[in-house]
Length: 174
Image (cartoon, rainbow, N blue to C red; front, side):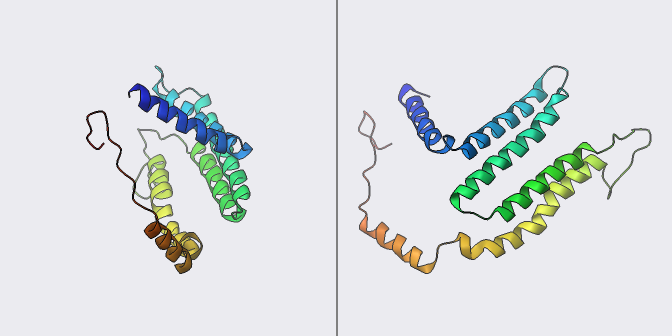
């Protein structure tokens, strides 16, 4: 990136961090995501992922959910949904840690797949596909704009003049 673009990105990050990161929930969310990044990056170490990577990833998940919960409380959101999501996340991590290793001489299968693959595909793929449509339908009215809000947005958009496109030093729009 060029100098101005780098400065613009750094400025945007600093503004976002000052609003978001100043709250304890935001700081926990950022710390949890950074911890998860370190845990995933450790998989690229020479002998493979170290033993502490799994614990760091699980701890990061808990810290991230705690930060999200604090931010949800700040925004007035329901803690029931977030708490049940955090509980499912914690149970999922514990469940994945308890997967026994498979002996290649005597393979075991769960619904036609090795246990670890079955847990990932059925747990992370199929289960959300069954649950998310119901959650979406349940929360649709609260999560979308009402007709009054939509009319207000349309009025404000019609009253706002369009912005002129920025141009670079050559005079071309960019």
